[in-house]
Image (cartoon, one colour):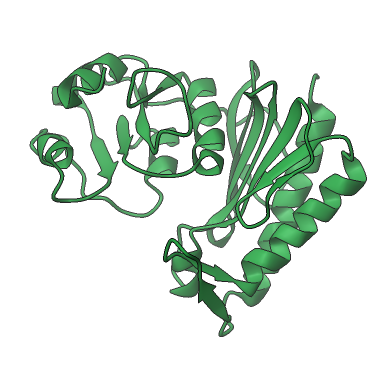
Length: 254
């Protein structure tokens, strides 16, 4: 099928990244703080170097946008990489970390992979072909589709948000009957059908790109703070297709 070769590269990179990270997980890993105050470890950098080297070999004409190295090359096809998403959790020896890989063409996401190595799980999607969850170390098939929950009103919805607890928007959301306190792997809970809505008040383009494609291919929707689909506005609303407008109206976003 179309993009199968690209998907194979993305999955291979994600698995190798998991092997590197798991091999260091119990160690005392050195790190430093970036200008924004977030940590970067030697593991982030080692994984990133491997991913970039793989793409230089397998897809030399494609551009790359990676969290630590920034833009590399140019072109209508671009790989977006977050080598170790959840570095703070990795340093704390807890779950909720993994690798994010997205391929875009002309600014549109075509395929995405998200891993959770401690659980030996990954989720992947290809534009127009659905979203799937599989064992990280097992054979990838199209026999494990994921679909979002189908709650059709906010009164019946399970809702979670990431942001400033003191913000007016968080206060509004916290009054909903189905409010869930923020926790790790909120997005995974969404695609696994445990949540109906996630509102994000932050995140960069490489964080949102794979999540948006997975949600859309699982039957849901993403809307940015203005009601569009931009990934660079520091968050937005992830939901099943029934609830997107209701959440935007509740927050006064769109």
